[in-house]
Length: 318
Image (cartoon, one colour):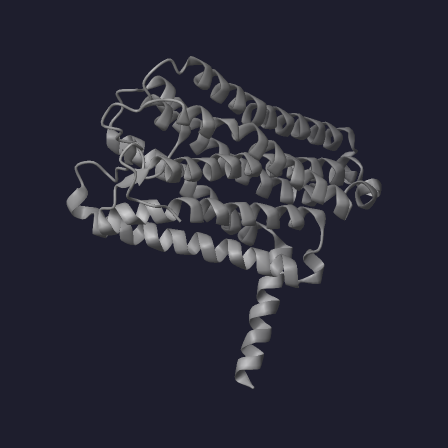
């Protein structure tokens, strides 16, 4: 996916890092990374297969989950080649075009994931606040429109960023803080006045992640308000079960994202190992934990898993 060596003499080349000071142990460090990436790929692929194949999972919340799994697969495949190439082959160099392409996919897919989490919060809001109108509001076309809107928003708002970066000269050592291309990281290496690009990047964050957090919080305030208005005997606490799954996914996604953003903006003198750890957690934990959270929390997913594996065992036994 990535061209790790730049062939154009007039094109800047960037250098990835692994874990500074632990280069001799990169092969050993790569083993858990490789295992976790494989688990993330298999877990999200399995969710996609289950939602597609099982009729009882053909509901809006599981359609959104399938979109989320597809996004997580894209995030893993966007970062895994460069991360493992550093560990396995010490392939640290990447050309500008390949770097910008990887950066575009990483940030666009992250924005899509944030948008899908908002759509899932809306799904839970309708299910609890207006259960009788759920099937009328959350139709297949509504699910498709919300998912497409998340994709279009992310791709449209992010599209200018690679073009901004192409206009800058890069006149230093061009050593990145991560094992992949991250916009604030690349922008810090540019020479010249980057104030407009920096402001646009901040506006992108505010128009996507910050707005999404506000909508998610507002949805849960409304959900809690609806639950509290009901009589105690009428409160269906089981309806909040999927809300717990969703909240876990929100925390898994936003906590590493916020931590990495704060690290880049306010702690310029932080340890390189801390940068490496947080950057890998940012794009590895979400694809890894999302399918595990829903597999462990959702009874319908558990039922679909048992059914599919039981049928396969029966067929194998015959």
